[in-house]
Image (tube, rainbow, N blue to C red; front, top):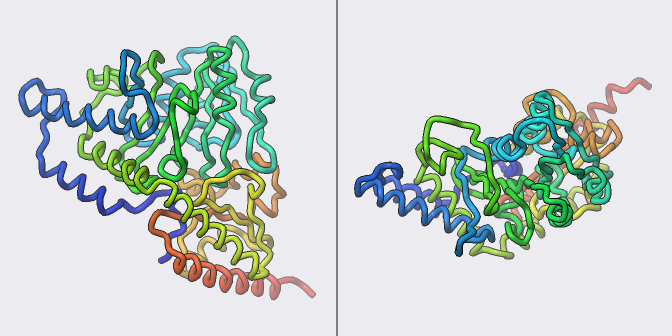
Length: 387
C-alpha cells in the first residue's frame, strides 16, 4: 500500500518511538504528586512544555510567558479555544467557511447558545478576503478563528494579516495550525495570534496528544472539571510520555528544516505534473493559492470520487475523500462547496497528501496505479452510456 493520506495521520518517526519508550521505562511519577518522584516528573513535564513552546516561536522567558496547554489532540484544542475564549453569549464569533469540522461544529454549538455566527466566504482558490473579514469585526466580536492551512486543499490563509486587524481592535484570534506545524515554519509570536492548535500525529508524533498554545495574558475558561492540573484550564493527569514524543517530533521537524519542506514540495509537484502528462483530464483544486508543500486535491471529472477512492484502495493507493473527520459521511466536501466549484468537480475530487517518508518511487508507482484505475473507470462509464 502506498500511503498518500498523511493529512489524516502520519506514521510515528522511529526516533519518536525511542523517546517515548525511554520515557515509559523511566517510570515517571505523577506530576501532581508532591513527593520526590512527583517533583521529578513535574520538572520533566515543565521542561518539555517549555521546549515545545520554544520550537513554535512562543515567548518562554520573562514575566509574560506564553502557555502550552496539553490536550488529547487537535479537536479538543480547537474546542477549548472556541468555548474557552468565546465565553458566554451574546457576542459575535467569526470563522471561515472552510474550517475543520472541529471548529465549524463548535461554532455551530456557540450559535445554538445565542452567539451570532459569521462564516467568512472564500474564493475559488479557497482563501478568504481580508477586507471582508475586517468588515465583520465589530465591538461585539468575541473571537475570530481562521485556520493556518486547509486540511483538504492545503491552501494557506492570511492569518498574520487578519491577526493584525484583530490586534488593532483588541479581538482575540485563534488559528488551527494542525496541518501546518511540522510542514512549514510556524512562529506563534510572528503570527500575532492569541491561540494556536497543533496535533502530534499530523507530524510523525504519537496519537492522543495535541496542544493549545495561548498568548500571555489571555484568559481561557476550562471546559473540563475535576482537577487542578495545567492551572485548572485543562485538568487531568498529564501524559508525560506522549508530551515527550510530541516534543521530539517537533525537534526532528525543526532539525530537518527547509529540507523536508523542499523535498515534499518537489514530490507534490512531480505528482501533479505526472498526472497532467497522463492526459486523463485532471484538475488540481486551489492551484492558484499558496499551498502546503505536501497536499494535493485533485478532481477526476467524469468519475465519482467514492468509486475512485474504493478502486484506488484495492489498487494499493491510500488517499481520502475530504477530511478524515468528515469522510465517514456520504456528503460532498464542505471546503470544495465553499469554493463554489462546479458540482461535477466537487463530486470527482480526492485528497492526496505526502509525509516525511514518502519517496520519489512511491509517487511514480502511485501515479501508474492511479492512471490505470482512472482509465479503466472511464472505459466503464463510457461503455454504459447509450449510443
